[in-house]
Image (cartoon, rainbow, N blue to C red; front, side):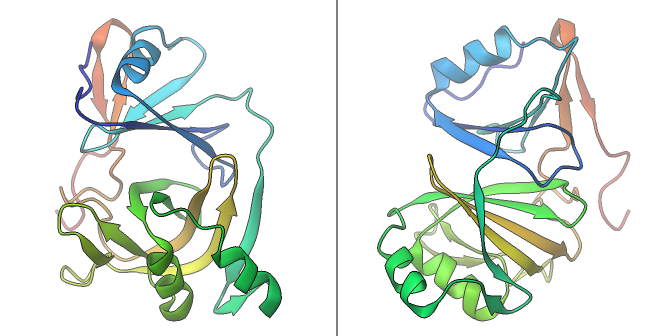
Length: 200
């Protein structure tokens, strides 16, 4: 069975199907996540792991309830000026940012700050906070693999940001279209979702 890194918090993303934009997530410690993987029912659900092994994607057809609010779409803020100002005061210091393409495919899970979200609203580009570089990170700024945003949703309990994007090229630094390019299975099996990397 795959061993998750013990020094990291793990994000578990849950949704009813691979092509669904309905999604929830929770951030847990490594022991909880490892137990989740060890006791996962692969006969009824699917489980994918991201490139850094600090995010899991659970596909559970029985999931039904999701709470989200449309914040921004096609360049237009969907809140009144007063709502927007008030909302900014509720944004956590650091929170998960999930990027999906328009088909509902999950591309990557990163982290962001208030400034990341404000920049995304202003520029229309997938923007995050790089914890390793300790600064603003516009996805694809160097590689050209930009995320042109179509919509931004906000979730509460817990707070996280959901980008819906037109992904240019690969979302993953490994060259795969999505960071969730490995599917875990019964009997410790691991299979690759893609037969090749973008551009190969």
